[in-house]
Image (cartoon, rainbow, N blue to C red; front, side, top):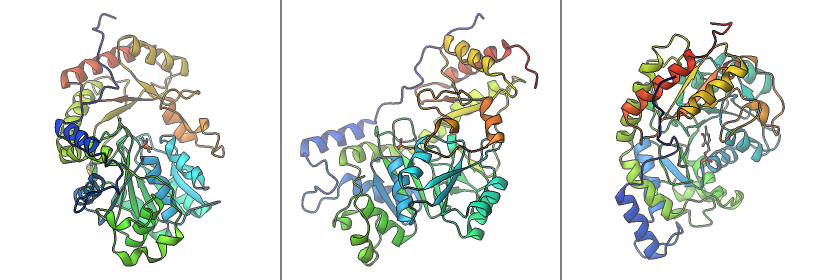
Length: 402
Ligand SMILES: *Cc1c(COP(=O)(O)O)cnc(C)c1O
């Protein structure tokens, strides 16, 4: 192949905005890094971040946590989920999601996905009837929202609380409504590769006052919950303050100082991600072997990564395809690999989850490839990457299925 090798890093994020760096330096100079360590009359960065997140999201309450996984665990405990309960979640997700379910003592039951990478709502309905779950954890993996109108109707009809894992849909919308506001709670991550970057960090939003009071105490507020920027009134803490265990999962002021200026610019970042997504997608769409997930008209997504399928590809060809692309500098993740690699693993690798038969998901994952689109790439970079992927796909022998 005579195609120029791509040389930029797929794991290089943009720098923290200068005002975030300055705010972080100021926090370090003050020595007041802990969220409850404030000077008289001062509001901590964490408290201010909570206020700003709630305002941006349009939710009544917000809680900053130590990670997205911590936000998921807190959400489940605050929803009363515990030992022996079944929680339904997508079979296609990242390991911290089944991990969070297992960490609260509950049992993940996995729901099939469609070829467009969304939760299969027929399978969800069947599994709600069969397992009587304590909650549905909808993990909008890689930014693909399922039919949220139908999902909320299914959960409401069954009386099952809905918790959204919005690690890849912070800023995404369904019919103009923000992801994370469809159920009891929405959880976000500010780990480096998500839509906000503080290294580690998580956010939980909800409109339910009693739920949020429990969540705040669970996050480790001690009796300092009045120092939260988007918390329910004192009355809602009356029981929670002594009933809920302190699980020490707070955010600190340094991280919040980095996040506030990023949140202020998130709509611009979303536009830039989508330019990169569309530039890549347009090239991939020109290759008949490549199947791109359909994007429903109701969905406004955040194209911080792109997924595509090579239907019917044999495992040895998938391995070769990933290696060929890597040779040309393009870092693809393949969800069909038997052994987990880096951040990527599939449900058979989660041995802490009961083995489950998910033939439709397995068929999708066998031919599913995934790639980050960091904002440090230009749209020209994205087109070059697209051409490399197409060249590697065309170099494969014709598959039986195509
Ligand atoms: C990253 C991620 C999480 C967990 O977030 P952390 O902040 O890393 O704990 C949860 N769900 C999905 C889909 C993720 O990608």
